[in-house]
Image (cartoon, one colour):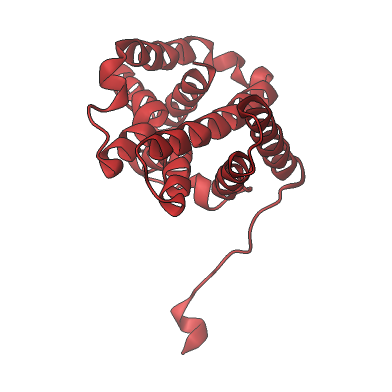
Length: 199
């Protein structure tokens, strides 16, 4: 619930930066919070799509977006808290995505990709709709954190570690890496290609 609300609010803020109307804010909030799970379910053939069976998720995302409009002026004071909530959302969605694929009997590589898709695709849809390059693929470690969380989660389960300990470890490691990446601006090497340089 926290993860969905945090992602909805991030979507609403992105819509506000693009001067969208209230309907636009609600749509972007919805896509950001539930887009990853929707894409995952479609790719895995997991029907009906999860949020269609839980209408409260729709209410939560729209409410989160509309509340953001009201409190946006105070968001700068809550910036650090918002980053933590966003990191929690990334880890939570990644683990949920892994579990969905595992329950459907998919191979390990598909389980990992399911976790990553669930974790990051809402942000990708948000940025595409807001006409900008997806931030999750070009700023501090984000998508790679989702990958590490998925691998750690699966590895610990395969070793027979208890579910609660595995969840705690995945959350702790994912949160620490993400916050460290923000604190020290850690990112993967960037590939910059200019045709003129190679002619």
